[in-house]
Length: 252
Length: 219
Image (cartoon, rainbow over the protein chains, first blue to last red):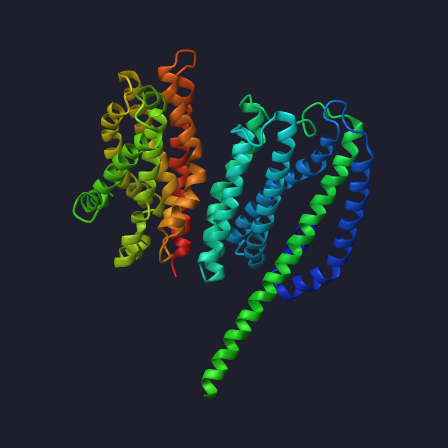
């Protein structure tokens, strides 16, 4: 019973007006939570002690690691929305994966840039063609390709369905990124937080990292909801413009 | 299905099909490399397999937009969509025909280019073998990109951008298998078998994705 209720609620969201009402209600709270989490997280990351070897540069981790996680989570969100587009023809799913692509590209770019800045003092080079770095760079290229594809078509629903296919095919890259550090013996260190047998990272760094990760996740969902709202508005404006043009044509 | 295979093959071999253009492009790309890096034979023989692979990748991409574009232009794509056969099978057959027309000539031409690159016999054989196994994967991956971009007026460039990231694993394992055959410590079989696995994986996923995209791209 609860199951069917949940689904009926979810399908309720197919009505964009309902989604807009929900977004208007929860967006201020989400934004406030994001700001608070960032305040706590940034305070913690700047007050904890530096690593005895890495010194202050360890603080780059608090931005780099959450951004990298988010770049993969964003693609997963897009893949789930793509399934929503193709299987249920959920109209919000179209909007969702279209809105998520630029966000994902931004997070991936942040992860790449901060990783590069961190790599310079630690590894002695800005960039190496290591498996993890390469696969994340491929992810970045895929985001850009998806954005380009979405822009190339003028019919939004067809663009959404076609890019959904591509998103799902590209999803093979996500496990490659995740396990690249285990499959290939590379310069990038293996996972130290989410792993079997608990995190190996010190408590000192774990707390700020976790709070920053939650803050980044909240930031993503806030921006994603905002972007979806904007996209719906943009489509409405476009539809009304078309209607106005048609009316004007009839009057003339 | 056989009729479709033969028809596509004939179309690709005859004038305007562009199968030979792909091979010519392949040769041109490889021939340009020595001008870029200099005619040092030792260096060329070291980077030879990689160059041949990259040339094959680029020329495989070149012909991709032709996979569904002409069918769409003359309307026969709609006929293919309306058939009783599963569309996945039709796409698979079209991919096979495309590979026979565009991929296989690249494989056949690769030993000659290997000679240009001053590679030894083992390296040439290994590169040819890996190309034989790897280029179908490029076609299958490319089919998804071609199907996605079929509705676009000038999708050729976009197809390459969309397909290249996905084709990187093929390139990695193809090149590493070719090198493993020449250099002693690295074993040849593991990367080669992974390459085979990638090809088989995309032989399933590629036509499925392409069929899905074709159904959705129709207006």
